Length: 391
Image (tube, rainbow, N blue to C red):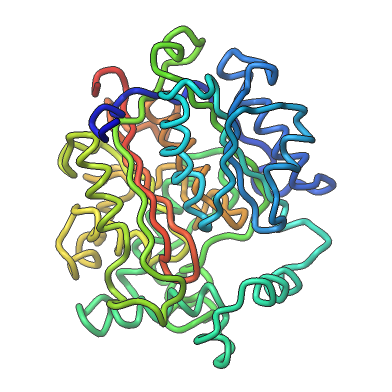
């Protein structure tokens, strides 16, 4: 089946969130189950209807088996590929293929983490991850990853294009302004450019406000064939385009520190959708660090390479700006439980349903979601979603 024939063939019929921010006393599988149940019920289904599963987690090599057992489901399609935080956007393509091939009828995509409140601390998790997944060319220098990898990218972008720390701060402030309109966001206190610039340095040029939150949280969504999704209680949100790309594992493997695989994933998504950047009403960009949205705005074609810094000046991507980005507050101010992609997907769906209250983007019919994974923008997955008006 060609890419163009996949356009609009599947839709997201249900979404669910749980434990976002802090979920003391819960395990990651428990809050995942809460989000999964919310998504399944939102779609007007029960767990007995779920015959496809997409899930991943950094804490277990065979995580899909944990989820299958805990939820009591028996899927005929299982996808557990883990390419970092972009995984839950990347899962769309195999789910689309499985659904259109008739292998399954309802696919649950789900994730949960209690990294903020779990007894197993952040230092221990980082040490365990480095042991299990070493970066041989970087490890001798003991980088503080992932901040160090992205800081190196940011420093090169600043050197090559004149991007400033103030430009980075604009991204953080825009995210916080969106979060202040979202009652479910974790960080909602006022934040200014000066606050960002004057905060504790984490990895030069990043201060603590240039880095994403550390929260708990779970998210899930249900995918179905479009004809079946029309019969569900919620307005379907259709998958119009999709693409995934990976070029490297760490910053030392990048040919150009200022260019990410989003250049390829975005082109693939646009080609399937038959759309261009000018056709997109809002963006959900994985903002692990403030440099990320700047890179993705460039690589996805919303501005030229090197112009991302000036592009975000003056509130362009914040509330009231001409290009809404990360309308829930993103990973910088809303929620970031280690792998953010599923939350970007859910926010795009809620926006296209038109139910986001004070942060709602008026008249939105298309949304682009870009997932990011790895220690240096290593994997990118781009999805273009739309309402029935965009089909």
